[in-house]
Image: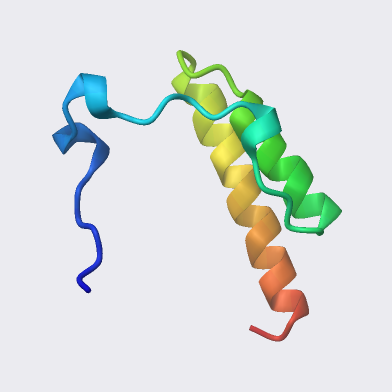
Length: 71
């Protein structure tokens, strides 16, 4: 099975996923990662700066946890 190589810009507007609410985010069991992903879900979708900042925090949290594992 080939990976899906469809990007959000290629999906017709009516077929895109609905925004994810904080209640829909799966928990990882890691409080730092879970808090970062919750902030990303809660970021205002109309505020690109808020989305970028929250995404960077998730990235930082994931990198930190991976480095803790020796990765």
